[in-house]
Length: 218
Ligand SMILES: CC(C)(COP(=O)(O)OP(=O)(O)OC[C@H]1O[C@@H](n2cnc3c(N)ncnc32)[C@H](O)[C@@H]1OP(=O)(O)O)[C@@H](O)C(=O)NCCC(=O)NCCS
Image (tube, rainbow, N blue to C red):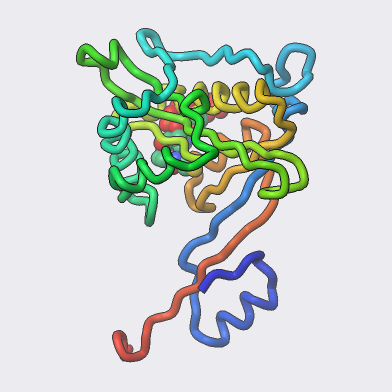
């Protein structure tokens, strides 16, 4: 059972009926025109629309190539989100359905490779951005950090930070004023990465669960 908002009244009601918190999903937002608190950009004017990510040596960032990168992306997505309730189990069909959406834009879907993708290179991580049209997530068009994932073997090298910066710069270059994302509250590495990138919590949804009496008499 999902509760939109984490109000004391809904927590009390849920607890009274034997529900416990199963998942807490944060929505975070930031303005693209204002600098992240600890990372004032040139002139402290906000996200620079020209991406200058600090990438590990030998790593390049390229856009996703429809028809070529699907299987490699699915493998890294599954590895990065192995413990995630939905994202880690995406299939070819799930990906192709998104590629067929009107909002899909490979120019905003960034892949970080070590080496040449067509000659034995390895996909290390990705940042897939999305643009919501006016009226979808607010009166104006709003960008989204749709999926950010780094292969477990490449985590902690600065790629998450570099790909976040690349995606935010892309969204700013599209003229967007704001960006949002969804993240599990207990994903502390991602939440702190986003907080240091200037995001703040704007909404929270809580999934409440209780055992079915017929399945778990205890
Ligand atoms: C969250 C994730 C994208 C971060 O990417 P990453 O490349 O491992 O992170 P980076 O090396 O760029 O580090 C980013 C920051 O997190 C910190 N960090 C990285 N790994 C950490 C860890 N295990 N524990 C604590 N802090 C950590 C770094 O110190 C860095 O801080 P800084 O920017 O202040 O220097 C990556 O761990 C991942 O793909 N996780 C699984 C999928 C996921 O949760 N995606 C986000 C869901 S919305």
